[in-house]
Length: 492
Image (cartoon, rainbow, N blue to C red):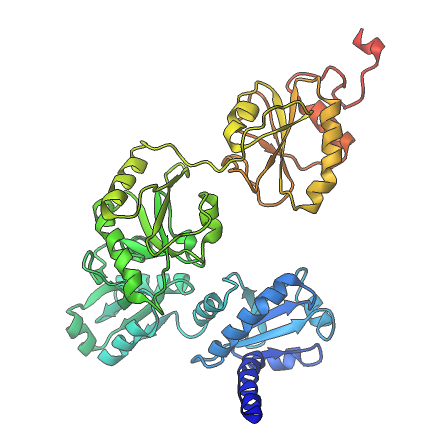
């Protein structure tokens, strides 16, 4: 039994190690010669202590295991910028970790701008090798191409050189990282499809349904722009499968069903609920976007709607309207409830959901506390110039700024200026105020609240005072325009 356990452990270790071994590691003394051995390579420049690098490492290894067996293969390489690869990293202008770059035949080609998960890396890099449109020579080739990946496919059928074929191939080069393209000039395939000069979009088997065609033929003009619009409009169908790596494809008004979406382990159960959404989506084609999303992949998004978790099997539905306002279906999911909800959101009949802390009982401190529910009253409609800080409770820079900001509020408490702060992790931030890091500060003049200005100045009290004194709508009572304190004589 002991030997059996050792054997099993050895197998498990061997499987894990195999994944790691598929990632090549080059140092300064070998990088140039060995990278040249690979037609296409993705290189990760990393530092062992880097947290983002540690999170990427297992995904990178999984991707390498797949891509090394691709036809043609793609090499995944890593370079340690703190030890053996310092010179290589400097030569390739690496300034942060991890940095990923694509090399072709030993030469730098482009920065990698794709996803950072294994599936996304594989899809992105597969699109980097071979022709942008695969040539199909037999009916079997077409069938294999359509079923090889669970992705929409766009296929061109061309008897001869035409304007449409030129536009098709041009667009394939442009969209190769996002869309699977193939084309054929072979008579058997043309005859089978009954097309001599045309383009067809084929839906993947697992997303085919009775509410829309499984294949859609392009009927537009023979140019890349119109063909691109056709693909964009039809790519995801009436109800798309929204994932972390394609979330930007779907625009508002947007209705999302969150549940246990899993096309690998439970395709039948997944489509059971998707089909019910399709019944509603078909009546709103062109008016709104409908998608299904795995609840576990988008828990952070559910939190933005005030939903801690999705109970049971039934979907939870949330939406954003054309103004990006948020709404949640409060009734239990059903076709009828969803249809009413969609109508009400589109017609503006519902109160938007607002993520907000409670409004403070008092505002006696020099720095006022804004929350989503009092933002308009405290910031937008206060009739005063306003400096507002958006912070996160866990942010070290915010904690360092806090005493400075409090001192600033104390110095300006009798001025026609509001100094305010908002916890941006616990409240919805209005769209005009773009917050990507903490702390983020904005100056909102009292007569121009629709055009707040990001504050980019220093973080000391004097820095803030000089900025506010200069930009205040009316000169401050206690400071001149340069931020210098006014003397009693000057005031008289």
